Amino acid sequence: MLFTLKKYIGGLMLPLPFLLLMMGLGLLMVWCSRWQKTGKSLVTASWLVLLLISLQPVADNLLRPIENRYPTWRGEQKVNYIVVLGGGYTWNDAWAPSSNLINNSLPRLNEAIRLWRDNPGAKLIFTGAAARTNPVSTAEAGARVAESLGVPRSDIITLERPKDTEEEADAVKAKIGDVPFLLVTSASHMQRAMNFFRQAGLHPLPAPANQLAIDSPLNPWERLIPSPVWLMHSDRVGYETLGQIWQWLKGKSGEPGQE
Image (cartoon, rainbow, N blue to C red):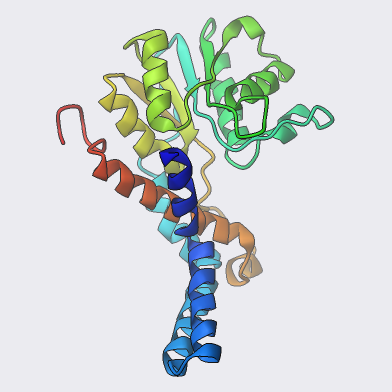
């Protein structure tokens, strides 16, 4: 119940739904109250913020500091386990396998397979419970796509009970103990994930994937025209900021023993 409530409340506080709620409230004031000036100001401010966070320079400048805390893993330390955190997914047998990994999940899996090839004999650990009404878990969906890309099932471990990052850390600890391992998740999510795994007494090596904030060249119009692509980048900022606040409130944002 708490998990579902957290998802609903958190979802409504993300940039797009929150700004749409503010615009709706402003329109309500304009049409149904004497607070027309306040309503107009609220609609105007919400529209302006929505415009700005849909522009590449604004969105990526907000996202870049969150993503750049850990570089792409190019270390030489060999590991026996590579943990891939669950993300967006569905499962439709009629689709190409990789089409079932939505948004952040496919880049995480691609990076994990690259690291698996660099660590012969390592096991890929996929985590994540099943979404409501879906008989296939997040972990199993990742495992099936990895198999379709040449990873033998004998090199795959699935942890299908965890519903969030904190539970994923506990499940990994129960499975492999405190040995070092590569932790693969989205670059924007890595700091929160590292906090949870370290708090659980584990020794993760950060291997970020799915970097989104762009420093490399783009066409001028791509920087100047609002786009849902850049709005999604701003959404990641909102999502991770809310997640970090929640983590801090739970006392899980520091090293073990630091509340």
